[in-house]
Image (cartoon, rainbow, N blue to C red; front, top):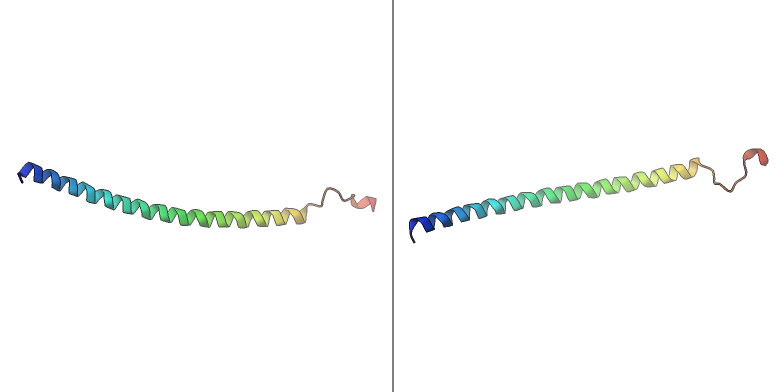
Length: 70
């Protein structure tokens, strides 16, 4: 194998190793963000549930007559 071809192969292998490392890092970031997103969604659902419960307790239904009619 002549030197220029061997040099090109070394460069290609080096670049491939760097790309593999980059893909691994990106995968770690995606997994971390997925976990964080799931936690945010769970917290949001909890807050929506509490808000709905609060508004149902605080606001009287529309079909009840006002207190002075009773």
